[in-house]
Image (tube, rainbow, N blue to C red; front, side):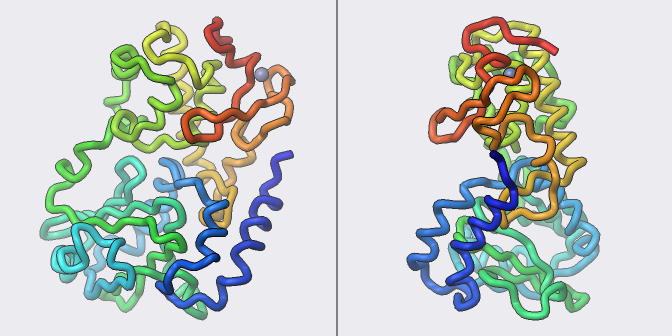
Length: 314
Ligand SMILES: [Zn+2]
């Protein structure tokens, strides 16, 4: 059975023994190795969008007065360049591109943050004592402090002069006007790749990850191993609609919370296959199976998503 409480308490049980004792930026030890068993999930488009919406109000019109980090690898191209680029600048807009959070600065420049495996934002004022794993701190002109906590240290804080250049490798935004049925058709037909791997490729479609790819493929009735160039017009239309529908629904639910890293969302209640291995398919009642596609755990109903068969269309 899929159990949120069980998964969360499992993660916490591993976390608890070393969390209180760990000072910020202490070197990685056995605790970090143990952590690797969990939190393989990177926040996807709906979670990042939710975070952007939640921090935007407190950030816009604030000037950054100090930037400090105790984990230099967070900062790209390097700490000095990030500091020089952002200190003294005012945040005029906070947006999302793919899985990146983007601070638009005035008079110029951009700060891109990628949360990767375990990154999260906290406001210092919301905590009586400093939260664990604070790696990077932004001091703002109203006295507030935005903290970037990152247990596994894979997060990135990138300064860029030109946003288009910095995000040139990212594919189409699936909720944008550019993501049309025709655009998806071209994307799929020009390649001979397994569908799931293709959809996870951030250089083709930006923001999709493991959860929403599995959910969109299920809703469209398409097997994740289907070769992209073999898809016909109707299943492509179903996939296009399913991707947009599942992302929109997840944003309305503030994302999926199935681990301690990303709390507050409730999309997990509406997931139909992801994390439900062994449970009955909500459409046909057969068992949801777990298979590995590339390096990724994948959830599929073989009846509703037949491989090389005619997909069931809604
Ligand atoms: Zn089914």
